[in-house]
Length: 118
Figure 1 (cartoon, one colour):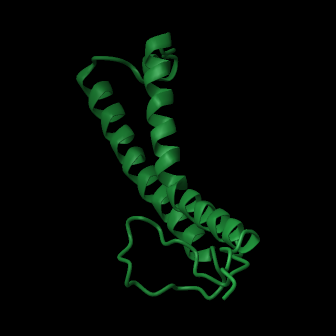
Figure 2 (tube, helix red, strand yellow):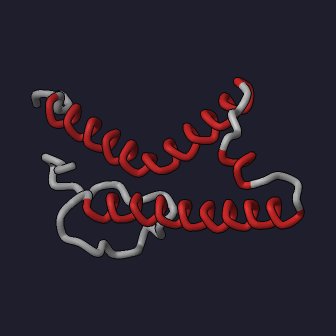
């Protein structure tokens, strides 16, 4: 998101404030961090899921077909939705921060402080 005031976009919350940007174009770093966060989460979950499926099938607790045909209850679906919303909020936090900063800058530019005549 380009800032009309020329201010730097907000940094992803998990970065040190002093870390330099990788890319010159505003917002590209934020997008990169979002993609990296998704990739890390997906990698971790994929490994956990693979492990779980292999252990459960090997122990004969469930078959892979049982796992693949599972349908969650409404309360399970609600829990999953809550976790998904939390993940999305975390992922989009840097964009929300950037949007808030841009909104404040735009409002400040449109409503400069009144000067008192001397």
